[in-house]
Length: 388
Ligand SMILES: Cc1ncc(COP(=O)(O)O)c(C=O)c1O
Image 1: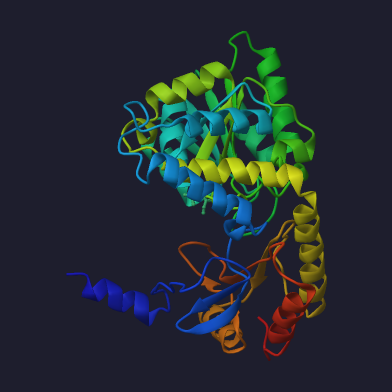
Image 2: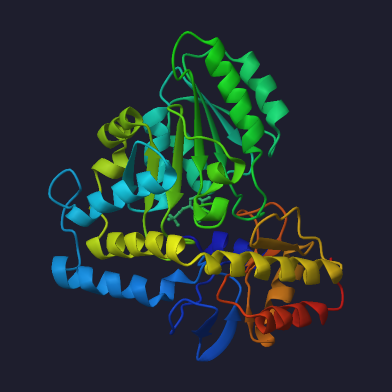
């Protein structure tokens, strides 16, 4: 039934395949019986394999079993879910927080819950696919603003007269590794809100999936910019990236979280996260506060990688974080470079349309890499003849 479409994907180098590991997640992984240096995970702090995180999950399985067996609003949650929510709210400096089963389900649940008919969503053109899908599920009007362009956003906002306007942006863009101009966007929202009689006329929704654990001493993008959480800001983030666990959260004012709890369909109509995942996330939050050296190592690894990759003449497309895209030109070239890296024992897959418009190798460094690991990556990138 789909053979023609599949043929098209194959002929255009767009066919995707899965590479499953036979090892834990980490700086070194085994795929197809061969060990690779791994530069493709979001496990930025190496917490997926941290002994305390793993032990906490194991103890939770012994205490609560594996499946949560029901949605949260029935009997799916355990005391660990509540503990994680309290800890997340404290970590993010908000009144309240709510756990979701994944970042994808958070964005596709929260966005339609906060943006309804008669409202207008303003979304950065490079926002994550889960935000795009959340916007599609919302009955609000959608307006796309130019990537990171707060001035364009402001012009577009001025043209709209809606009951509520919701600005949505990734904090760190997952395929480009650049950071949203949150200071400017925050100032814009703040000034618009202060001029209005209706409270929370402007809502700011930030997807901090790649900022949490990475920016602002681990606290995320708002802390990075020195922005105070406010009643009109909703932060979403994931436990599945720097926190080395699984699941996601919304953090904000008490009433926005209560509203989301009552209306986000992906929260209401889905089995709750297993308690062991909540336990791992609690442990990961503790580790981030207890072991700041992990974050320091992440950023020094990032500096080394950026310095050496750019010295080779590669375009890293404005990266500001441990996500370092290496521009490749064509899709075929991206595949060739990725294949060359694999032959040199390095796993860093090509990222192609439709995920991104411009093909690239997405290099992600973590605190678990050594200086020698990064040198190996750079050596392999340096032994490619034509770069773009
Ligand atoms: C910016 C962003 N938001 C949301 C998600 C989805 O998170 P999860 O993997 O927990 O579903 C991702 C993951 O790729 C992401 O990069």
